[in-house]
Structure formats: structure tokens, C-alpha cells
Image (cartoon, rainbow, N blue to C red; front, side):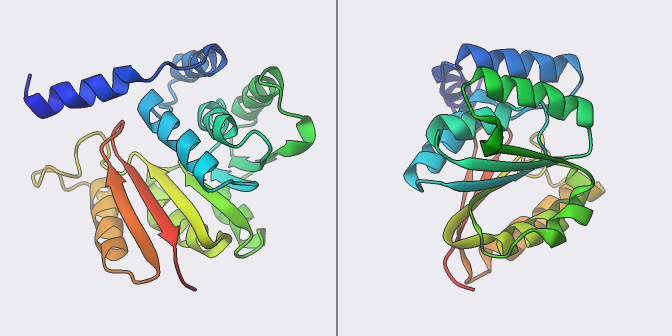
Length: 210
């Protein structure tokens, strides 16, 4: 195994995932839903804490893994989470309750994100997580940058899409969309950006101007 691969593996295994989050992860994997990795989750928690996030919105509830990690860093935050799968959200709702999050601080919206997001208030969120249908990633990030306040952060897991984005031989639509997103973000004066290798990539965008 290459030195960088060993370092990546070490960083992933360094994180000790709380039992309730590990349980939510197991439920997610049982249903074929790919959650964020423990290392990505730990980064979400650190960023939520560092930004003192009070208002969070996530595109893609899943089984609550990402939401639980963000609540770990910002336990007093209010989370709005959008997902098409009601069954997944019910499982996430139970996980949040078990984690001690009051029901009025975890607002779960069942519906298509591209139909729900236009109704969300502009520049109203400290933290926005985009972890849903990769085929709509560019549209989701456009909405996310509209919703996040100046000084707030947008987080995009799976930004290296299972290691395929860095491989020039890979040219499918999803890989092309992520490459387009990364190129446009790198050239944008409206955000500060960083790309972490955690999991299969975590793109971090802090909005610095309108």
C-alpha cells in the first residue's frame, strides 16, 4: 500500500464514532445508502463547532449520520433536513431523539430538494450540507450558496466521487459534473474553498461575499 494510502487509512480509522452514529451508519448501509465516512463526520462536527452554527440545512437526510455528526459539533443548532424517502427520515428522526435532540430542533421535510429549496430563505443558514442525488450536484450547490449567510460554510461530501474525479480516464456525467463544480469554485471570488481527502472527498466552501 502506498504511503498516501496508508495515511488516508490511518486518518479514517483515527476517528472513534459514537455508538448512536455507528448504529445509524449500520442502518444506512443495510438499506444500500452510502453515508459520509467517520473522518468526514468528524470534520463536519469540527466545522459546525468552529462556526458556532445555530441554523443548519442539509440536502439529503439519509438515516441521520451526517445530521448526528453536525449536532455533535453544534448541539444547540436547529436542523432542517430534506429527503425524498420518508422511511429514511423516520429512522433519522428516531436517531435524533435518541441523541437527545428535541423534536422542534430537527425539522424534516419530505420532498424533492429542487422543489423545496427555492422556498427556503436566502442567506439564512450558518451551515449547508449537500449530500443527495449526485446527478443534480451543481444545482444543489447553487441553491446552497444562496441559502448560506456570508461567513457561513457549504459542505459537499463525495466531492472526489469514489476516487473517480482524479482519474482522467473516468468521464461519466457525475464525474464531469464534479469536475465542473471544482473548476468553477476554484475560480470564484465569492467563496474560500478547500478540498479534503477524507472519505471520498469533502469540499468546503465559506461564503465571503454576495
